[in-house]
Amino acid sequence: MENVVITISRQYGSGGKTIAAMLAQKLGVNCYSREILKMASEDSGINEQLFGMSDEKIRHARWLRTLNRPYEGELLPPEDKEFVSDDNLFNYQAKVIKELAQKESCVIVGRCASYILKDYPNVLSVFVHADEEFCLKCAMERNSMSEKEMLRYIERTDKYRSDYYFYHTGKKWADARNYDLCLNSGKLGFEKCVEEIEAYAKIRFDR
Image 1 (cartoon, rainbow, N blue to C red):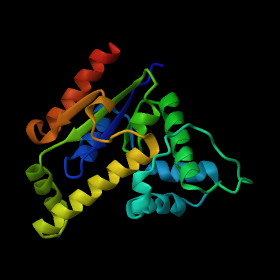
Image 2: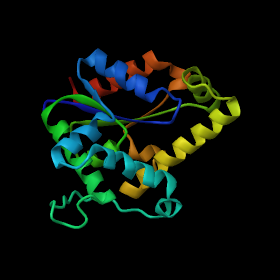
Image 3: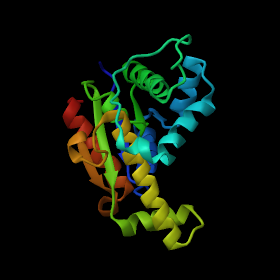
């Protein structure tokens, strides 16, 4: 495959989504995040709201956080009683992500894309993180909360991302071994992170 796909996983407040958008703009490719939910909805015929509701179920159901159902790729037909199950909704998102990886160069944010595409030779997976002080500062610039409230929100969001990743992959979200490249945006800054990812991609794919 000639196209290159870069997946970005990120801690809340680390600027990972901003870095992904900057990288996509610099490379002249599309950046996909929640757009994948809409695309999965259009592909499956399932209401887009159900995809969002599935995310929220994992966010709030404590018992789900102790389970894991690693993605295997099977898609259930509309006549199956589990057609709109959480697992099948995720599988439709995974189908969209795989199709994107096959047809175009792009940047994909979150959605366990690093795991879904782990066996694809044209994929580079990145995890963006930063220390608490940096994440808090960045988050406070975008949200009107007290510092105490913001710290709790950051903790809850990262916990949700960790739970979501574990449920669908059986792996630990923040484990560096699950990614090709881990970057501390607090020390590098957003521009340097973009440069590092671009440089790594050039070496990795010899282009």
